Length: 240
Image (cartoon, rainbow, N blue to C red; front, side, top):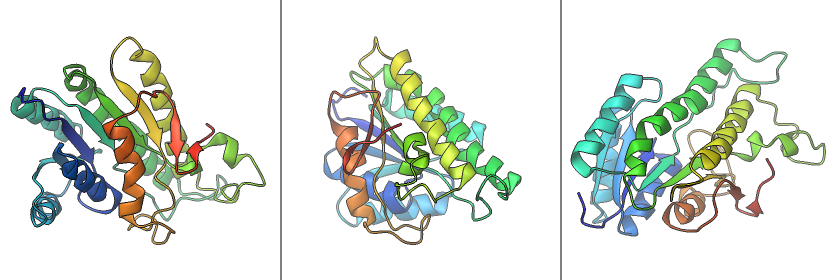
């Protein structure tokens, strides 16, 4: 498809920040694809956007199912021929996670496999489609909990938030951003990590921002800006 309308895939976009990112991208005139592992929830999200006059489509995408990722890439290739924007939003938190001395290994493994390895698998599958776009963009949804600098600073509010699985998964995601930036330096593809802020969602259960507010920064970087290989939060650049 070469009509000039940008095509975006937002993973985990059936609810929370992901759905709001999809909504705001659609409002900006982007052709949005909602990636979700549950077909029923994906349809509900598409219907939600349609009720506001926004057009979106969905594709089954489970970060723990490599076949679903491969199939999703093939579907996008067949229907659109390219991908202009990839927002790696999908992620999980496990309540059995915790400090390194007591965290459930099964929980840590599950979080790392989904948040990092699953995101890596999606990115690898979508890279050929991003390369086919005039100026591809990758936005990795990170968290200040993934900052080694902030985790090691006793004065930081994140210092006491010790979830070895979740924090490490976001630190690994940031490494993906850094290495992708270097690998894609000679291409027009821009890649950044973005921390939306302390958003109240099903994942967190509490927070100071609404999903609508939290979606604004990722959407801003999905739509424009020349910066690449950086990490942005509501207050500006975040230290790795």
